[in-house]
Amino acid sequence: MVAGCSGAGALGGEAGAQTVTVAIVSNPQMEDAIKLAPQFEAENPGIRLRFVSLSENEARAKITASVATGGGEFDAVMISNYETPQWAQNGWLTDLQPMVDATPGYDAADFVPSVRNSLSYQGHMYAVPFYGESSFLMYRTDLFAQAGLTMPANPTWQQVADMAARLTDKSKGKAGICLRGKPGWGEMMAPFNTVVNTFGGRWYDPQWNAQLTSPQFEQASQFYVDLVRNYGEPGAAQAGFSECGTQFGQGNAAMWYDATSAAGTVENPDESTVVGRVGFAPAPVVATPSSGWLYTWSLAIPKTSPRKDATWKFMSWMTSKQYMQRVGTQLGWTSLPPGSRLSTYQIPQYQQAAAAFGPTVLNAIQSANPQQPTVQPVPYQGVQFLRIPEFQDLGTRVSQQLSAAIAGQKTVRQALEQSQEYASTVGESYQ
Image 1 (cartoon, rainbow, N blue to C red):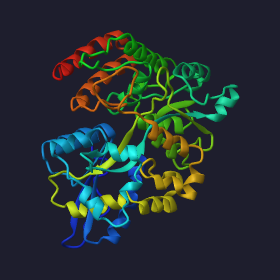
Image 2: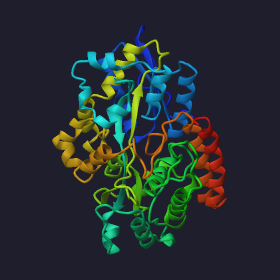
Image 3: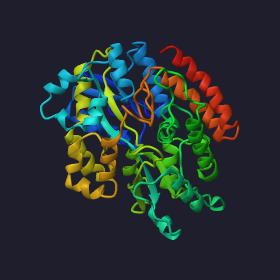
Image 4: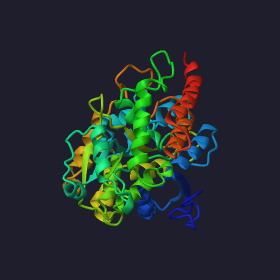
């Protein structure tokens, strides 16, 4: 389970050094942070770092269990704008605002406002963003040219499906599109929910009546399942963000709809074989003007940590303007953690390296609308998730049903009938 337990200084160090244990998600930008961590230790000899690096689903489960029970295993935890306001309200997290305000040059006003607000509770930040993201459509410009296709400036999902049909060549192992089908509220549910929203679907009406068997929700679900079954990657029912990143980066998919944070990876020659041949378009729509999500991987300090000052010293290092410069000069400018700071988009070298995707990413993050994610009124907030405590379990259960439909084990209607029961049980507790 633990992909990278030993941190930079886990093999020892001077007597009296504090060991800060950091639970982190094993995405590329986070792996970069672990690579650079020895430099932090060299500059802060009294602090040793120990990383527990986990896949997204494992990280969410392990971190939630630890923080909710006051387990105290971790000094810093990587969480998102889903957990932060709820956990702050529960009293599980340390209020970071006094530390933020007391740190010279940290400049919290530089954080992208929508991201900063999503990590705040009662006007105080309880987590600081490592990167922010929305969602967009990546596509192979060379394959489009060969097929005589042009990506619309603001594509619809039907246009995407038509293009995927023309670009699929199963005999050569080439998928028209990569879409997540791996179960998990933060895996398949993330892109899937944006499709539901823009089709006009919703999880609940304002009276908390479940709507998963409504025509709009069923139409969106059938579309998503058919698209990935007919034109998606092999083994789609077990493909998440990482798996789709590999498929697209190795040239096995013509399009990939996913997180904007993937842009740096697909344009990194160490990670991708399609560098310079990728175009970027806004998240596809149907009935809404935009449909990109709003998400941020961020760092927080559980209330239980006895090493808050040392932990903040590391967290502020990893989320600072100076860290951006460090990544750019040492690892390459496309490797910068995107979408957290406005100043990132003013760095000349980054503007040049991210010319193909930088403006699209920032615009997607700033135009995401968690307050009104779909066509009709809803009693919850969130684009790719519902900001209610039950969604971790509910979203995962529903994703398991839909993943089974992608695998051909049941029909979409069967999946949604079971999902409606799950959602109704949750909705009743709010009525």
